[in-house]
Length: 245
Image (cartoon, rainbow, N blue to C red):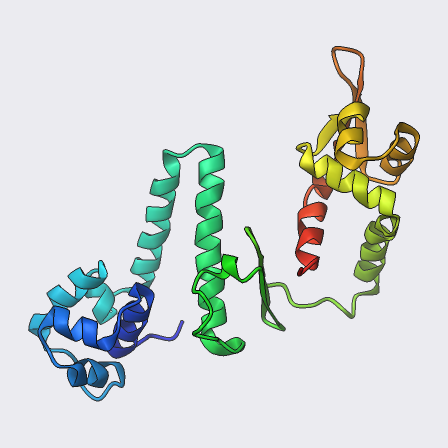
């Protein structure tokens, strides 16, 4: 990981806080030119300014000085785990989504794609944003965020064949509706529940379910319940990311 200078860190923290160089200068009792010189690495802030700088941004002086950036990363992860420990599963998932969206934003701000400062900083307001490079992929659409560091496997015929076998049945609109109905129902439901969610008639729904990786189980009331296999429960959320409108 490339180590950032104190000037780069001040510039990053100031932008994250959403304040101008003038506002930071006023808070510290220095000139605008001083802040500009720090950020352009012409000089460093006086050592007596480090505690108020750290306090202003809500970080430690060690973080500003880069004493142990790996430790900062570990501390960040520990804070996230601590924050999640008292949350319900639903609240924990919401926290993870916000953290993922923040990291997605950070990746795009690295200059891999044009960054329009006129657009809102909250990428969830964009509707859709994505980066796809040989070294990795990140996609955000509404409240969904996806990351992958896997290199493209376009030269693997076996992998492409498996992908084709997975996607081919979904070319049938009824099968696609059945898949998304299962997702909407928590990946399981009986014909009545799935029929309401999909809008399909019973015969069409049963035919569509036969094309999906589902297992059928008999509920205590005698009704047959269809459950999407665990290995396929990621398909509908990922397909939803393909639609950028």
